[in-house]
Length: 259
Image (cartoon, rainbow, N blue to C red; front, side, top):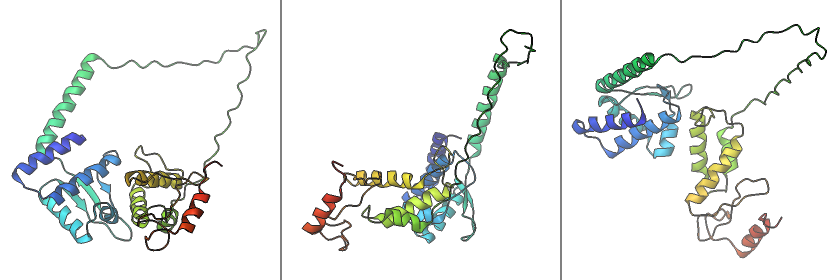
């Protein structure tokens, strides 16, 4: 099943099983998360991440997944809050299964008729070159690869400390960032381990600043800088009030412009 197959299946089922906007929103969110995990099924998904991204309560999440299960779109295994997150399974209707089997069989038959690919291998043989005038140089021993330090995932408090003051809704964005990458076991969409979570957090902050219409600023170390409030919603420490002239001058002096 591909992404488009799941979408087509959704609209086929919706013809005779009406769905609410929240049900459709929740289903397509599950499709997105499954796609991020390279269509691993079943896949674990913390309820806290769903609540943070969709803004649903725990009761609403439980109700929506039960409805989608009754309509034959998903199945799930309830998790343990302390040990294991809930696991979700994207179901496939019988019509799509038959179509996939037919497509796989035809592609396999065409591949066999055209012939199996020929794999060429090189046989390396060692010759006795003791009688040669200029014997070949000995191969230099390969240097062993230096081991990278083991990655230690950050805690939620560490992420909040990094986000603090850099966005208007920094605490909410810190939670979304933490639960998103924690559910992926701190790997990117290609499955590679994230070596520096703070760099990924900095990109997240800059992207949110651009979405909010703010010009991102950076510190000397390249991290996103916080800025005082202007017209509300800032980080001046006065609950989002306008910054004073002294605070603005101090902030301008702290910018790395011209350094």
